[in-house]
Image (cartoon, rainbow, N blue to C red; front, top):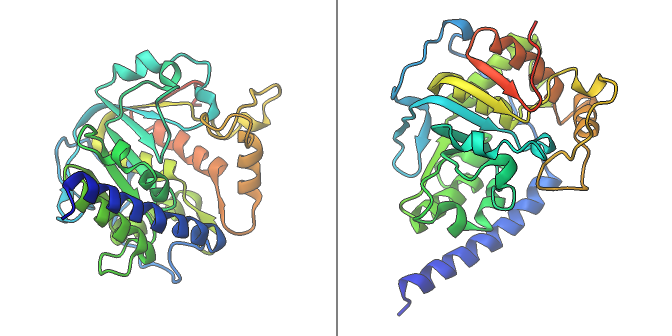
Length: 302
């Protein structure tokens, strides 16, 4: 006979073992989301999409019940994982927001003064799921009511038993039934690709590009938040500005990769790079049609 705490411990151990293998696989064989040209559908008109509170969003479905996401946010504070957050003492201001969004596994403990304490929603890349599952009780335990929205390619997120990341999330949902985990649908992934092509004139796959978690975050935020405050995100010209502030790529990885060096490396990569700078140009355009404001550093929108 195995008690409930022992059972959860065994399950968590199994998750960590599976996670370790998956991390290796991801880093050795990262590929574009889809091996074919997706059939785009839907209409992209960012200035014509009104905020509608509590409207079910079929592009994101719960695991395992497949129910659409329902989110109401009058004001969303989107907290970047950038080293720009360090030393800004924005935590208290962020914590006063009704909805606080974070990305991937960015921690709050130890960084409360700069990034705040609360989290209401996390947008998570399929490649970051293993990092969450290394601390399943912390992220998915009963004391955590955060909504998790996970995006990723069909090969990893398919729900027919063949999606390795979906299977991990399904096991986490079974182990922690109070966890609020949502998967981005295949149609929604195609839609986000279509938006990239509409805004940049470039096909994401043919240009060898990966979309960032920030891209998926802002697209969801524009659908569900009446007003958006973004903290710690640099604009498209920041890294070309004389005397710019050099910070780590992630605020919780001090002394590791330099943010601008990482941005420039990805932007110029012929294949498999995040187009961070290109995305920031698009974000500035969106901010002219939506109630989006950028802080630490502030953006000058022409």
